[in-house]
Image (cartoon, rainbow, N blue to C red; front, top):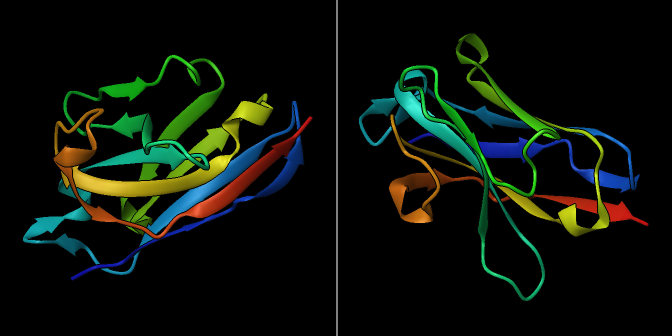
Length: 128
């Protein structure tokens, strides 16, 4: 019953930074509140499958990052604003993709199958 909306994408040069936002219009996802949900970020480049990027599992303060973004990207959450952020630094051309946020049960990790609510994505393009 809630909608996830990504924003903050754009065109940047390699080495630059962007901060993506994922905002929920409500606090309930199929009987689960935003504050009790894992919020993950995924991305999909042209001709490729949707890949895991990062997640705040909301379980024991645990976060996970893909090896390709570890040390460059940081996920954070503001439950009061129903918003999750993805700070992306030291961007590379291979980071170019449509970025999606998604909500799942607390403890969800890297698998797309673990998420039941998805935004429509925001384009990130990194030029060399």
